[in-house]
Every structure is written in C-alpha cells, then in structure tokens.
Length: 117
Image (cartoon, rainbow, N blue to C red; front, side, top):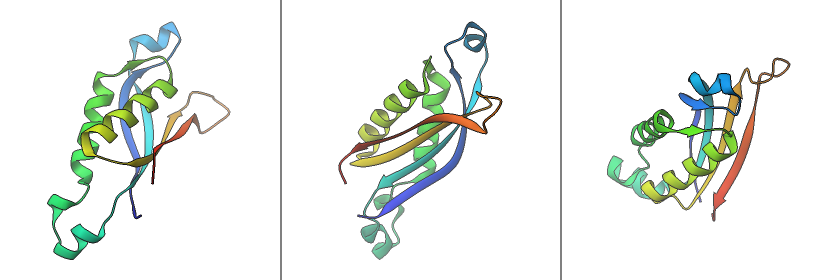
C-alpha cells in the first residue's frame, strides 16, 4: 500500500486542561500519513480518484475551529475518526504536536495509528 502525507499543517484550536487555556486559541502542528493506493489516480492523472490534500486540509481546519478539548489525545482520536469516515481512509498515522506547552521542549504531543493497512 502507498502512503499519502500532509506534514507540518498548523491549525488553531481551543485545547488545554488549565483555566487560562480555555480562553485562548492555541496552535497545533499536525503530521498525517494515510494508506492510499496512488496507482489509479496516477494512471489517469485524475484528482477525482486521489486523496485530495486540499479537501483533507480544509476538513482538518474546520474540525480544529470547532474543537473544544482538554487533551491532545482526545483531539487526535476524534480527528482520526472523522477523517477515516469522511474520506474512506483505511489506515492513518497522526502526530499532534503542541508547541510551547513545555518551555524545555520544542513541543509535546501524541502520535496514533488507526485502522488496518
């Protein structure tokens, strides 16, 4: 199976467990890898058969705008469910990084894999 990826997508969302975090929007950096057979779209040069990066990115941005979670774990889990359902993705890997959450680190977060290859 082939992989399609989106790397370093930044979205603003309401995320955090502390009171001060509940009143501001924060940036999350997302890295996504999807199992997707690219042979069909490549053979016909047909965007209609491809996993459309623009549509996926727009869906992620809309999800982030509406999200209201305390944990990046919840954000990751719900986003994975939404993308798999909306786009018919059988497997994905999602890394969610919250930059600046720990002053001693470039970022903290989670990486999950869902589905079957």
